[in-house]
Image 1: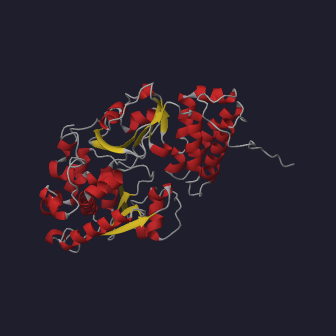
Image 2: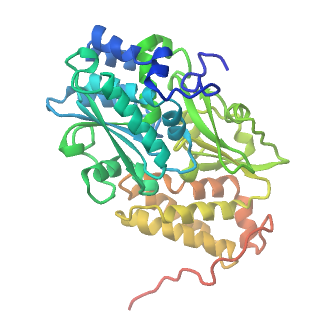
Image 3: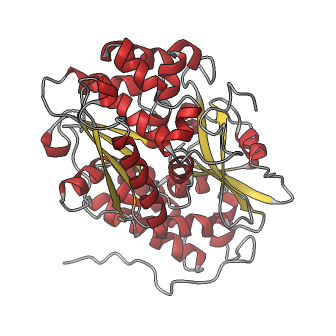
Length: 438
């Protein structure tokens, strides 16, 4: 893979750049110095807009548009949050970036803060990895000691500090409005929007929330220019994208970097994983809330819109190859059961609907389903997204929707009384029963 294709992981094969000195030897913090000394916040924003950078957190929102909203605010106090939580615990993207090159993320946060006029930031991570947390504290202290962070960044009037926040709140801990509630010290519940965090976030002040991978791209854009950055990728999505690729028999995934527009098959090859009719049943794009696609879809470009057209999502940026012996009804059941336990419980459609989907699927694999269950699943798959406050409920139906669409034969086989792969075991003895109250 050429240098123009691989950016964030250029040093993955070499030693980690955990110290500030190592990072500076590779040109680190030059972009921040350039921005502070030579560019106005508006000029930095213009470069990011020219680059066409989209948020890497799953939704693909234009980064410059979010930053512009925060930057236009007249509020004296503003915040930047780096969401490095990785809601799906199988994702290794945040861990890889922070463990191997923490100062790249710190520089990206500082550039974002300079651009929007923020003076304080939060680096928000899963708190279960104590080793990573200790390493990040050391990197932040080193940055403060060297004047990269603090009351006078590189001797300028720009002030910026970062607070490390480590939590463990399950899948919902990474949802944008939920993480702000956690930072505020409030219950981890999704919030109605609008108002959006860009106007009403931490301490009820304008807050820019960006994914860790998004922020890690900012030094590259400022250093090389937006036009150069845009040469890689597609017309709609510039640059490269990190993915955690999991093979059919792998215990954990491999992080790869491919240009937007590369196919699913190319991402698999970059990870050294093959998928054929002899070894695989399906490929899942998007992680726990992702969609299951047939192997015929391996040539689908990895970009937000083409992937969404298949019924899957970029989501947590996990690509997983399912083994040949996978029953897709059972797969959809396991996904839905897991999701039913991850909802924050605030929305009735999500809290009850996802659980009802999981229970109906359990009935089908247990041999007590009927044809009407398919209609019920389709109904709930419309009802849950329409009534949910946040993206969790909107995306939670992707496993069942794509499994029913792309592997309808598996569902019919179960309704006919036989698991297509002879792997399913009954997990339920009774169906959900509608009780009529007279």
